[in-house]
Image (cartoon, rainbow, N blue to C red; front, side, top):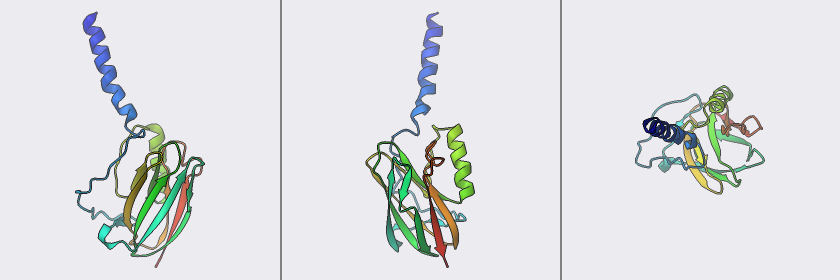
Length: 163
């Protein structure tokens, strides 16, 4: 009986840890991590020493980004300063609408999933995070908050990259 109780308690402790993985904990980007050379359809991680301009993005519990629409020149390296003025976790994830919808669906199924990609900024309430992205290709892309329910509530924005 005592062994069974210990086994059950140990299992509960082990299994409950991931439940808090995507909570309000800060996802830190490692500054010593080399800049990724992986190319996405919407660009690649930008070099912080080559930033063309800084764009401030405000996130609110009204499930909106301000501004919600951006125009960027192809080749431009943008430093995004994402500020969470709300009381719940928000994030800014850049991608195609298809990719964002797929990721949002995955987040609904696995809300404790942790991820740290250069095109994502996870921002705790009242905090600010930055990401640097180079837009290497022209086209229309998006950004969204993929915390379960936020994207579906309309927390999405558009990026137009002009040649």
